[in-house]
Image (tube, rainbow, N blue to C red; front, side, top):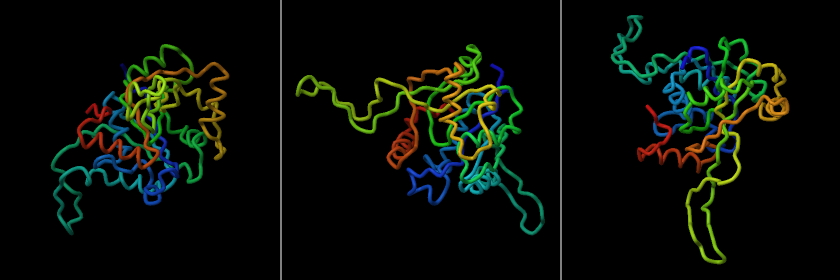
Length: 263
């Protein structure tokens, strides 16, 4: 499927207050899973499916995210440098992210998600935009997601997921435990799992008001207008809201059992 007409937007500006033990020091998208920021993992998922154009709305500690990409080559490639000569480093090997085009846009420290989206409007030159949060991964087939969106013709698609339970589940008959699951998924009900797809008409639903939260008025109005569809994902999905979530992701990565690792 053609991917040139798609821009990927990843929200990177929030404070991550539920994970303050880490986010006091750095923005949540830069917290490492394994030896790479979770933002890198998310971008690798999109890149695997052929989406290489990214716009990152930054805010809280956004300079750290800018510095990460400004120094990406020297961080991830071996090089030779002639000190004192004024020459640029000669890089000795390539990396797999050579096709990425990354635009980092300062959208304000205290700005909410609706206004962040509005403030990047001029940077979207494509018909479609895929949007997600900078703190969650999944094994979602993004090509199928895009096809689903194009086929229904509405403005917006949200990926609906079954959230992982934070507690072990006991399935009982009377007082006898029939089954115990340590890390089950909620069997009923789906939630907003990010991984949205929109066409550019979505910008009619957002404004520059920094208090505008995308998940409230804009999505509510899209649903009321019959313009919001859900793509149901029943596979792996995991946010990184808390220290425990971070441990789950790191354990999966370190043991070689990360379901989101397609590359």
